[in-house]
Amino acid sequence: MSTFIPITAEDRRRLWHPRGTLCAVCRQPTRGFGWFDPHRSKRPRPSVWFCSMSCQSFWTRLAREHFAMVDLTEEERAAITATMKRVALLMDEIGWATPLADLTEAQVRALIEDAVEGFREAMSDIARAQTPEVPF
Image (tube, rainbow, N blue to C red; front, side, top):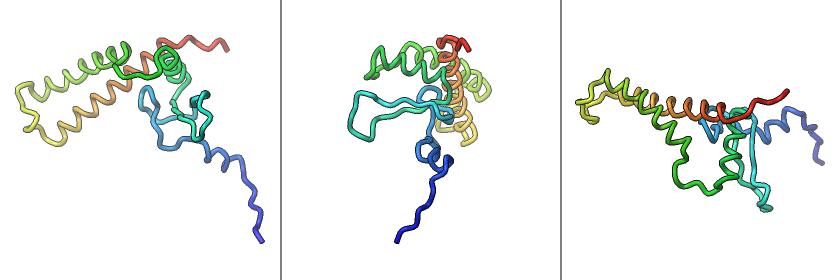
């Protein structure tokens, strides 16, 4: 005979919350904002998770305009440009004449972290700037 184990609200939340998933726009940890393809009837439906309503609004607007994104969007190009400025400052410290093979592990790690963090921040700023303020 099986025993009935009541499911609590916390257990239900664990079933759908995307733990360990990164925001589809700015790559920060998600906070429960999501999207799924309403046109697909087969399960599991494709889903995307976000860290904020501004990232969610930004992504859904882009998805509505051109769902099958292959090329970089204008926003992504702007974020890359902003990131290049940040990485250039670090390269000034390291030295532009230094070959990549001669960089230490700490220098390579710093370059990668600056590039990723700069891109994430720029995409988050762009999404926030393009999202109208909530009226309530």
